[in-house]
Image 1: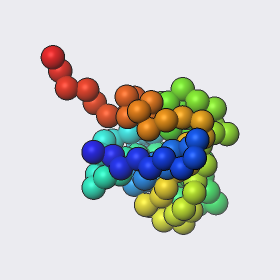
Image 2: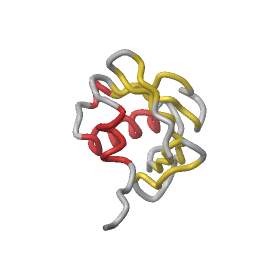
Image 3: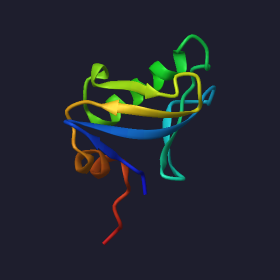
Length: 99
């Protein structure tokens, strides 16, 4: 399960980034983090920007609402998602059991 943390009106989302992938996509969950693959290289913040764009698009929020809180130069990052709740994020990012 992805370990989301509430921080005021924001949510902190741990991610594990795999840069230089064949395409941008959410891979799944890994050790409590969301595993994300992006095509951008880990140079000059390109991979960080790609991750923020992918998460914003997936959650249906503006890119400006997604920022890298920690781990700017590391594959393990914490993203700050502004003005969303943990339940909203879970509903979109975590697969629902089939009925």
